[in-house]
Length: 472
Length: 142
Image (cartoon, rainbow over all chains, first blue to last red; front, side, top):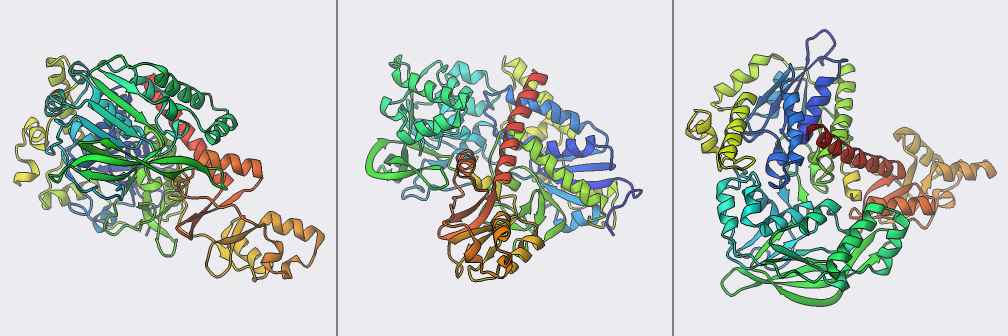
């Protein structure tokens, strides 16, 4: 039997504690039509997903969104369970026993490959691994990146690519203004990187980065932005599109790029080369199994019948030095055990947030999605708000119709007992607050905004629970 | 934003019909699935046309026997197709300028979905709302 009014609260499990999960929790707990309780499960010890581990460590203002999330966490009816992994510590069948609905907000956890020769050479990495590393993500904190290389190629011109290029160009002083863990500050301060190439497949008018991100590049203390006049100039198709779009921000972006191109470099220590209309064709072996250079193909824009501009190869090639390569050419979600997955788009199969059977397209009762695992990796943090609101509306509509799971033990204490019986050492929201305060205090002591813990062990130690799950 | 982001949360089904089928059958498909158009496909290949409610109504006004005609007599063709990689904004401009509302999306020689002008407008609105939500939090929290 599904949930019905008078049964007590609609019990919702949210898997994943990133922005989509918190926006959904907010929407569930703020409405008054249906009484709801939310248990949020997170694989890591800490909440906030990409706000903590994805947003650039020098973009602290963007991270203030966590204050709104913390307010949601403080609402009656909300509980946080960190260090609980769906599919390992908690299965779909467990959730069906204790909840009426589950909402998956697990994000897009893997990166796409470029699919070119040499991609597997040493020092060729997904940008996300580097981002995770400098942001203190426990899955990536033990990685090593060879920052003794002088040339780096970053493939892509989306916000991840721009972040990576900018972080590589920060001076020691600028690094200290970030919330990175110490190991990252140390390694980046000792970096010998001099030339960073950002490689865009299409032209200036199609680049995904925003104007503030572009402006920021020009404000780097120890790096010049270098753009060739040829590549900054718009082709005929882009000019037409710019005119038709009548978009002031886009016009300004194109103008800023032209201004960079017109400026002579100031002779700073590092150079950030912004390249357009180029696609990596191959990574070249340096003779020792590492990447030493990259072959680029030059592109020209082509307009399809649908009006979209896409890159086509001209057949011309060039080679640039690249001792280190980061690719950021798209992200995909990963399938979860027992949950329908759409392999083409890399998302949980869904219609407007309701999970559907991949074969029959029929709605799967009780299962919902929001965020990147629903629509793929697009938009800013705030995009997850309308996205989550849409899904929550579907959840409440289904609940009102009684179309939910019929849990045998829909009680608060059951899941705690279950996790304990499995030896899962979980963290609470109070535990997170303790970690948060310790990081902020460490920051204050070092005159920095925050110093993130370098790994899970340090966090368990901070909580006075040495070992945590690892020892248990 | 790309067309793929719109398709990802639209379900996996696209509705197609053979050019030799009767318009009557198309009407039944439109009504049963609450949709405004079907993609006309000959033998499982790429789209050869689109058949929308509008096509049918327009034809019906001058020809009462429209329902007994075959789909290829009533459909709109040639049909403009998109790719999952297309920018939503460019496609929207084309749909507005060329006055069509349904875009079959094709990749690697197969139909992978269809987006309507409504889907794209809604996606663009959500994107703008997202940016607004970002600005709002920054103003409130700073």
